[in-house]
Image (cartoon, rainbow, N blue to C red; front, side):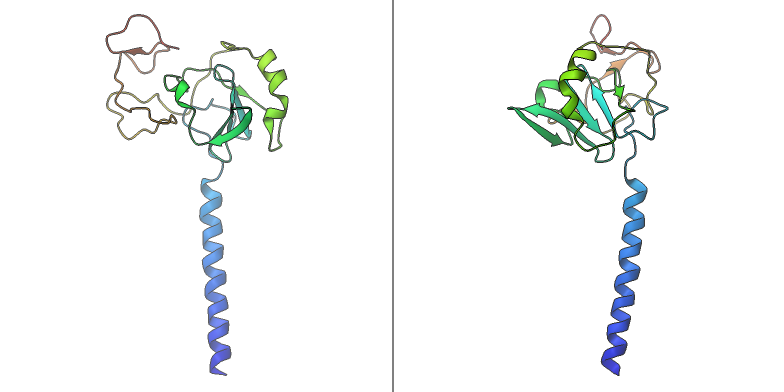
Length: 167
């Protein structure tokens, strides 16, 4: 009888613990990144024409070609360490809901060539810069110590001491 009570208590404890964990996971699942375009909270992917990569919103991962294989990483490769996720154009993939958006890569690469811009995009958050030390960038090995001058709300961000606009 005592053993049966212990088993029942153990099962109840396990059920309560697992249901709590499920709630925690689902709350944080699929939040758009701060650099994502405003107004598209129900999509799964962005295509980034300038780096020929996808961003999986649900998994918070970049998907890009590396050595002929599609790689899923939480960062872009180092060759894009200077790429501005806030300033770069994001093609919102409203029409795709599967798990392999890159099956249409040749079409996307042709339709949205490097430098493609359809219209101005507002992002969820402000671009990290001086005074915003706890911001996370999604580049492997990128320093968070870049300084920007000027108004962060303006469209043209300049590295401190540089001339012209960065894109």
